[in-house]
Image 1 (cartoon, rainbow, N blue to C red):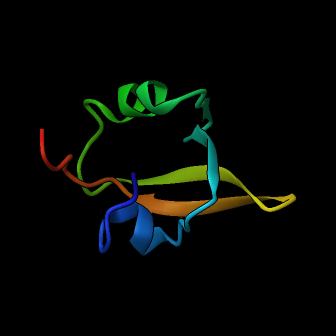
Image 2: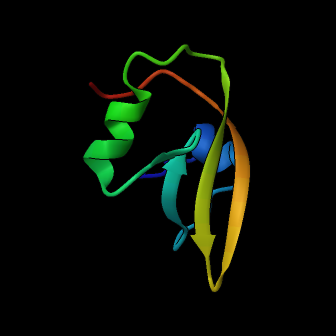
Length: 69
C-alpha cells in the first residue's frame, strides 16, 4: 500500500504501478517486498524497479520507517 506522503509516493510511485524489484532483488509479492525492507537502514537511498503501463521504470526511494506495525 502506498501511503500519501510516504517514501513510495515521494519517489513517484503511482496507483497501478507493479513493483518488480527492490535494489535488484526480485519482488514477487507484498511479503517479499517487506522482507527486502526489513532491517534496511532508514534514510538509505534504494532503487525501486517497477512496471508502469507497458514500460519499465526505475525510481530512487528513500527507505523510511514502517508505519502501523
